[in-house]
Structures are given as C-alpha cells and as structure tokens.
Length: 259
Picture 1 (cartoon, rainbow, N blue to C red):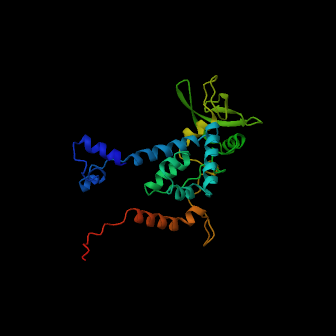
Picture 2 (cartoon, helix red, strand yellow; picture 1 turned 60 degrees about the vertical axis):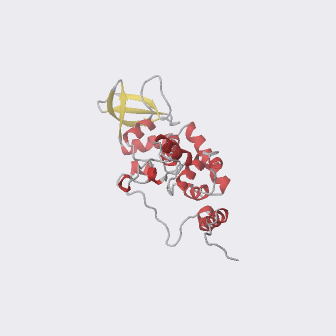
Picture 3 (cartoon, rainbow, N blue to C red; picture 1 turned 60 degrees about the horizontal axis):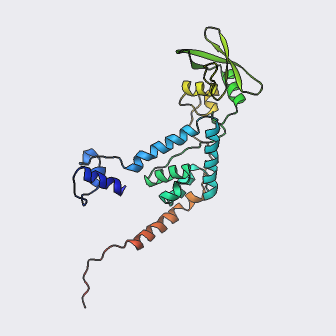
C-alpha cells in the first residue's frame, strides 16, 4: 500500500512527505477517496471463489480440496474462523492458498464474511438426480435460450443415472438436455446453468421447494454457538500482537534527562 500511495504522490507531483490521508480520506472530508490495492483485490478474489464454487464440476471439486486444506492446516471450524486466523498471516503465507488469501484480505480491511461454500443443502452441492427431481416436483419453469430465442421450459423426467432430463417448452415440444456440463451437439444449456440464470439469487435446494420460507436466520439453542479455536483465542492473540508492535516501535520520549 505504501508503494501505491507513493506512486500517486509522484503522479500528482507531490512531495514524498505528503500525508497519505489526502488520497484515502472521503471526498466530503477533503480527500480524493482513492481505493487502496487491498480494497480493489478483495472483492475480485471473493468473486472468483464464488464462481469457482457455483457449479458442481471439476473447478468446484478443486476449490473444495483447497478449502478443506486451509481449514485443516490451521485447525479452523469454518471460513469465519479462518478469517480470524488469517489476520496473523503474512502476505506471502496467505497467498499459498486461495481461501487463506481471501480471508487475509478481509481481515486486513476489518471485514468479516459469513459464507458456507460447500453446504450440502446448496444447489451446487446437490446430486444431479436430486436437483432434477426437485424441479419435477415443484414444476418450476426455467428460461432457456435456443436458436437465439428465449423460451420457458418445464422439467418432465430424469434418467436413472441423473445425467439427462426431458424438458418441455410451453408450446408442447419436448427435448432432452444434460443436467450439468456443456452440450456442444444440441445447443441446449445444462439444467444447472438454466436454474442459475432463472433463479440467480437462490442458492439452497429448499429455496426451490419452499419459496415462502425466510432464509438467513438460524435456530440455535440459547447460550450455545459454534466457535472455532482461532475465533476463541483471537482477543489474546490480537493483544499479544499489539504488545509486540509496541516493543518494536516504542513511542519517542522527548523529555530531556538532566544530570
């Protein structure tokens, strides 16, 4: 960040001793409100991880391995716990793992992200046959583009292995398409892709089967809450880090000693 601020000072032909606050302060307080590198990288990294975990494919499988490696390496319970641990990692240490790096960025910015990327109740985690059966039961329509035209279609049947589904357009014509993956022969999208485009804000299977439910809240026993090791000892480690920094950079004593 210091290098980034120094480059801005040179671009504005300012002295190297100019306060960095002139660039970082909000505009209503006289600053230029320039985003620092971490603030730019952070949403890009988290967005990349979200896209990697979006579909049930090889990319998601690799992301899950990387995620579990990060949790096991630091003994963390979940991604929220990992963010407390990542605050004490250096840039080089965190950059060895995508999830550690994302958590390090949020921690350095004072942000906490609540996310469960591999929840078994997620649409992306559901088996092909279970997802197709949910669409058959609920009779939801999905928006499908075929030959440069958008049409609504309903899921009618699913094969025994769950790889293919029989769909029917509103006009009555039936066709077959894959549950996941790319189909380069028929031109139809996969069922998962069609669901994602039709319901972009829905991530859980229950949101398809129970649309009237309110999500985002959890029922927990009073006085009990899951907390990982890193989150539990965070106040002690933060205080220890503060003491170390104080010893490394003690305040100057400007008082003059007299003999």
